[in-house]
Amino acid sequence: MTFLGTVRRQKLLSFTLILFTLSVGVVIGTLVSTGVKAEKAAVAAPGATPLTVPSAAQMQSLFRDLVKSTEPSVVNISTQTLPRTQPQARQRRRSSPEDEGGNEMQDFFERFFGGPSGPGGPFPEMPPGRRGQALGSGVVVDKAGYVLTNNHVVENADRIKVKFSNDPTEYDAKLIGADPLTDLAVIKIEPKKTLVPARIGNSDAVQVGDWAIAIGSPFGFQATVTAGIISAKERDVPEAPRSQFQHYLQTDAAINPGNSGGPLLNINGEVIGINTAIATRSGGYQGVGFAMPINTAVKVYNQVIRSGKVTRGSIGIKFQRDEMSHDLLRAYGATEGVFVQSVVPGGPAEKAGLRAEDIIVAINGKPVRNGTQLVDIVTETAVGDTLKVTVLRDKQRRDFPVTIGDLTQVHADTFGVPSGDEGQRGEGAQARFGMTIENLSEARRQNLNFNEAGGVLVTQIEPGSFAEDVGLQRNDIVLSINRQPVKSVDDVRRIQGALKAGEAVAFRLMRQARGQWQPLFLAGTLPANQ
Image 1 (cartoon, rainbow, N blue to C red):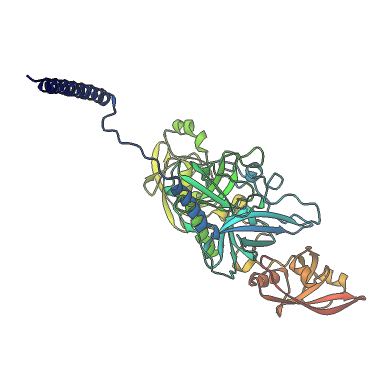
Image 2: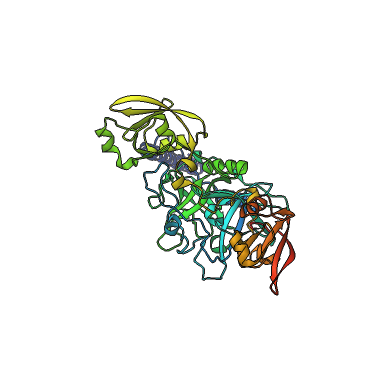
């Protein structure tokens, strides 16, 4: 073998050895890798689906679009209350918790929203001779200019002003009607532009944990947006009157004084509630706010725009509170139902034959388990309709046909219209001129040396009122309004009840000058809410 052949042979052997070594390494590496993979597969979660994180921009855009579409429907409401020499505001009457329907508003907003003397209240106490002012919110629900808000925002207000976000125009508003039992009110403006009504949602579809967005004017900061969640549904506030008409949505979206009357929205931008109150020890936000469900507000609104008021049914009983009646029901042989404490004399229940100590267990054949359920059924039944009321008496079931009465008449001491409030609600009832008048008796005519027939005597003029604006004075005698003779206080009420904002009003009157009665004519344009 030549030298060259020997070298070639050695190179071939070396190459073969190297190739064999590499092959063995690859095989070993493959076996090790396969073992590791097998080990990993053994500890992984079988069938697990990888999680994905949604784009932050999507959620930001959702809230941004929601606010952009709803903000034009939310208004700022400012009210003015003129000073009065005598308390003219309706006195809140107390009633026992066992009344059918429960108490009235009591001190709810003094404890929860500030009230007349608390922080953030709608009508803080005024020094004599000074005007009161308050701020709130509202939501446009009809392009014709109808706005939903809280009753406590506009209650007793002499003038109501409405402003939209990014619009300097200030609109006069008039009160169409209100419902103190749900603290809701409807006001109206005459729009100068096309309005965008808010979209109405369904509060029954709301679930705890859903997003909640509030828009309003807290502390006067217009178009403020806050967000949170629905914290609870059907919340009955212990410190509030147990009227059975107030079952709130609870939210931790920041609600402060000035948010009252504004909308609570769901994530779709639909109104699910009207922000009403807060539970607070400081007067400000502490994470517990309450909104009247929109489903309740819609029922109130529809009645108000139809008749100017809300009518509720009653059967005329007082019943034991649910939390106090368990043992009482057992003692009378029942496990559930409503224990009748007393019946209103002459009321529907008494006329039908119901008695104290009866236990109402069914209405029209459907079980009644508690007082809240009873009130909901009865108050939503039309006045004049008849319900079959099943009671347990001496452990025997008996049926009674009961004709539904009007709550304000059956329980007049609790829910009746107070003296002096007649004519203060409704489309044609906004013409309260701002003066106190009296009928002229014969003795008074002789004392005044006034011999003409008819007329009423002006005894007081409210500062800043329409009467003061047109020039009426104390001791004037009004003979006619808009050429309609005035012979009594009732005539004035009838005439002003037919007047609306923007109408011209002319007074013919007599005024003393140098000891003589002189004729005088005064006129002006009636502003909103006078």
